[in-house]
Length: 403
Image 1 (cartoon, rainbow, N blue to C red):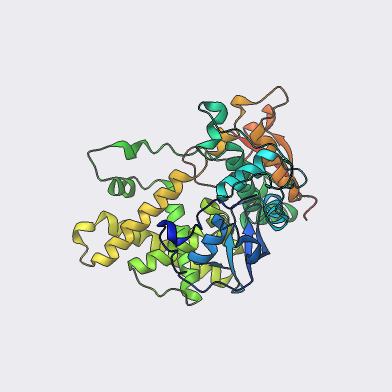
Image 2: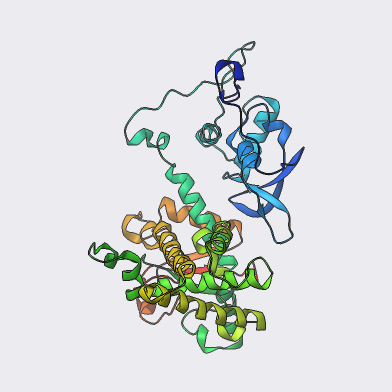
């Protein structure tokens, strides 16, 4: 195992390394893995130091995220099992595979981190080096993110969002108490959800009009929802003293960094999706302020010619552009998990990965799709609730092991 080479001496003409932008801890830091985003893992910097991987440079030069208890941490971008294998291999300078991992997964992680794997010069070769990648779909992973890694990230985020979804919990409670909301949707232990059809946004293709103005004029449901979600996050930051009630680009930067830092990514707003009757006093205040904020942002963009406060206008346009970017980058759940490409057992690789992610959290997928006799009567919860048309992709989830 050898260093990738970025730490060559200054004598060969290389530029000296940048000074860190913040003071990194001397020995250990906390990191997280994408499949266990709320678990802080201790990472020993001395193990990383000889190899100078991407993770160490991120710790040195990028500001950390901060959890609700004030603890600083960095994201590894790896699964927990891959990270343990990565650290174990660097510590012992010999590649080892953790349980349930493939050589391809581990090699991709080392390649991403910029570490060259090679047999020790004084020992016989203890594993074969992989050949250089070639062109074609069979070797496409060398040029882009492997689809398996992407699907793992999406399914882990979905599984976390589902178990942290306040509206779903309230639906199960309503079924227990006989509430009308749960009729044709939930029982005390199970609930039907539908996976959104991602909006096509054809109205954004008109080149004769300014895109953000067009978007605010159309005001699709997802735009209102995402602006309200951003407004709730903003209200929480104002209440805790992180932000003040203004409309500056510095305010925008702090707000959007907080949203981007969420492990749920485009699903960050689902943790604040609380039904009106179940909101606490603070939640009700935040939601009311968020709705006013969302209307104000949209109106400012539409009435840009009349707005004299240029900082406010820049803030509002930037925020609309930000939520548009989130929507554009978000997964297409209905096509990813849809019935068009399933086998005779109604299964697909994507569905299997979502089933596995939910199973880790003690949630079971009872079935995909409703029986024909029930299909017209069911009123499932829309996940994540940003679609413009009714989704026909339904699944029944069993939470009996959690509640």
